[in-house]
Image 1: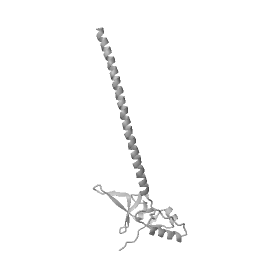
Image 2: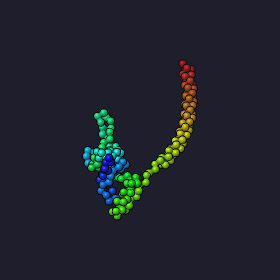
Image 3: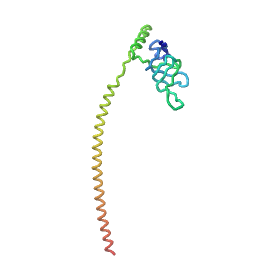
Image 4: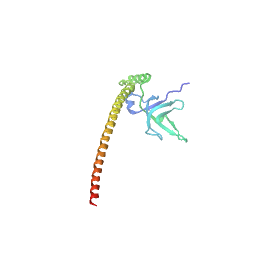
Length: 177
């Protein structure tokens, strides 16, 4: 048997925009907790239990005795929807019908974001940057080695020069005795 949908209150901004007070909650809606011990917290809905009329929110968990984190279910009356997920055509059509009946402007459909394209571009850019950085780093290491070899040679030359001076001083001291 199908359980009824769970209607949850909508925040004031959405009430004015859509002309409704409550709307059925689904996965993907953004909610805020308005009462209870978790008041002020909120996030994306990850599960709706129609049987117990409770909702699980992303990031809202409780610790068990063994230290394991488990999702915390909150009663629907303690929540308010702050953003509706209108990516589903059925929900969008329902909002559109309601706003049309109440002579409100029709909301624009939410276009699903396509992060894959931007991610691919970012990955390509990252690979190119990494290759350039690697080449620059290798060249810098080679230059540093060359410079350190030159410095070591100069230090050795200075030591040899100093040792010659020491020999002369020693020779001079020996002649005096």
